[in-house]
Structure formats: structure tokens, C-alpha cells
Image (cartoon, rainbow, N blue to C red; front, top):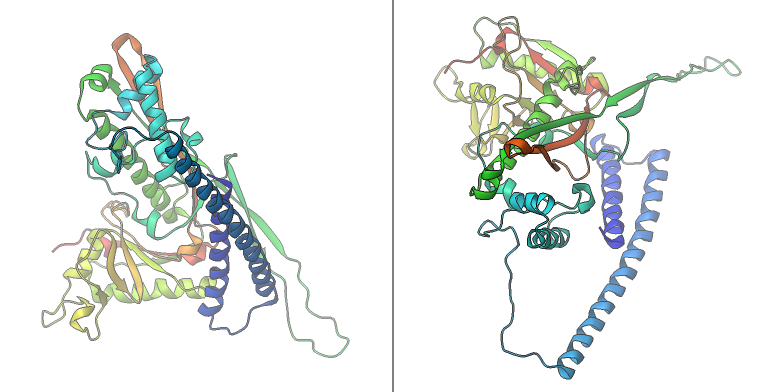
Length: 449
């Protein structure tokens, strides 16, 4: 990443910080900023102006350099005219889907066979990625940047993906070093009260905090690939790598929802101490009986941390349970908004989709995530519904994630190459656990249709 790119990136970050402050003021229906907010905004505005000045200066320099290069090229054409009439208007990427070259095969050949042509193709591909695809440096991948089409096109096995990680988390870049993140949480606040009479002592209470420690966890997978498959196969390496990467994403999403925090696991939302709990016990569950429990979860967030929740997260089977429910006259309780619903339980823009379902409930979008457990409860047949506040669902991922590759000749005696995909992540809902509420119980057993 160039220095100008870093300046532009910081400028974008400043804007995000300013928007967050102003959105918070708007959400609380305030017309004035607090002193702290005002000071922060002033500082951000000043930094923004400084960054704008730098961007303008470097952009002017870049434009000037481009003009000089153009003049130099024109002069070179006059001094030494080009031979022939061919002109390159487009060039396929080194590892495009239609290319005969294989990234994994070249990576293997370059490392273990000292294949010069393979090394040259990898170097050219790295330059292409720096220009067109990635914001992070190739140093994150030890000089090997996996062709993006391997992830986009190969789908060997259907996986649940990462809907909650994408739609309901505050995503950040994991710091470059360390295996724990520490956040101070105030557990005892200061005190204010009216002064009974002049010169009487005013209220005083010492603030106290506790340390929230978030562990950095490793998610990884491996696959042994025969040398014959790499050298003689067609497309086999693409399917294997794609599946490992998709599995990495699915594991991360499952962990941030269900991890118990032990044996290297992330402490997921379901097991975070302090989140709101709503029990829905029902031998014959109905949408009408579920509705008050949803409202209870909603109010627990608002009364617990004085925030408004932003999403519902539920299993696709629970969303289908809502979609399938009808009133006494057979009309669906969840209807598209285009039908002009009256007194509808929930509404949606159109047909439900996995992940971003397109439906909303009590004004909050519904995220459908198949990583939500379906084995809760005594009989291990219950799912759970979460009322979440997205800005308080924190997720850190390794810079350059979700993957990196190592090639180790661990099975040289059997012509076996080991491919490893790994990445680091940390997540927590513990900064303000009351910003979340979980609905569970026998009313959420496997639905029937």
C-alpha cells in the first residue's frame, strides 16, 4: 500500500468516526453535542482538513508525474519509433479461470523444483494483485497471493458461511502482535445527586473497572494432496483450496455464535455471561405465543444498556416457521411490503434469502444463519433467537485474512504435499453483554410444516 493510499484510508476512517458520533446524537434525538463529543468532532475535522491537504498535494504530484511520463513516452516514440502496428488493449490475468497455468501447481514447482517459469508467473501474479485486487501487502502471504477466482468460482461443498460475521458484527483488523486483547469495563460508576442545602457535602462515589480479556484464537485446516493430483490433475487444487477457505469462514461464524471459550474456542454470543435471557416454554409453539417473547428480548436490550438493538439473528428454519404461519382465516402473518400489510407480524421486501433475509421484525432486519445451534435444550432439538446490537458485537480478523498457505514436504516418501489454511481471529459480545438478548426454550424445538 502506497503512502497516499494510507492517507486516503485514514481519511475514510476519520469520516467513519465522525459519522458514528453524529449518528449517536441523532439516535438519542439530541440537538447538541456533549463537550466530549464536540471536542472529538473538532479534532476529527482538523485532522480531516490536514489529510485533505496532503491528499491534494500528493494527487497533484501524481498527476504531474503522469504528464512527465506521457511526454517522455512521446519523445521516445519520435527518437525510436515502434516497429509494427500491433497494440495491446487488454491482457488476461496470469491465473484467470481460462488460463492453463495453475497457481497451486506453480507454487509447488517454484518451491520444490526451482522452476524459473513458475517463479516468474507467481511474481507477475503478485504484481497484478497489488495493482487490482488487494489493499493489504503481499508480505502477509510470504509472496504468494492466491488467485481470487479460486474462492469465487469453486464450490465443492455447500457450507453455512458467515452471515452473522458479515451482517451483525463490528469488524476490525487484529493487531499485528499478541494473543490477547484487553478492554477496560467500568463496573462502578461515579455518583451525582441533588445538593440538599448550600455548603452540604455533594455526592461522591469512586469509579471502578474490571478488565475484559479477549483471546486471539487460531482457526486452521489442512489437506494432504498427492503430487500426481497437483501436477497431472485439472482443477483439483482449486476445489480443495476453495473448500478449506469456505470451511474457515463457516467455523469462524459458528464460533462467534456458539463457542464456549474453552480449548482454544472463541467465547461466543450464546455463552457470554450477562446477556439478556428470555425463556419460551411451549409444548405447542405458535408465532402468536412467540411474539411477546421477542418483545421481551427487545426491551431487555433497551433497558439493560439504553441502546436500540439492530438485528435479529435466527436459524433459517425459524424464519421459515414465521413465514409459514397464518391467521385464523388462512392469511400469512409475514408478508411482503408490496402487498400493503395491515397488522402483520413481520414484513419483507420480497422472497427470503439466506443471510440477509430481506425481512424485518419489529423494525429490525432478520439475519438467517444456519450456524445458529439446533441442538440446544435437554432433547438437543432447540434453536435460539438473538436480539443483537451490531456495534457491540466486536470481531477482529488477521490482516490479509482469511487465509495463508504453507507447502511442506512432510510426505515426501509418499509423494504427498500438505496444504494448510489458517488465520487468527478474536470476538466478544462482553463489552456490553446486556446489549444482547437470547430467546431459548422448548418453544423453539424443530418446527413442523
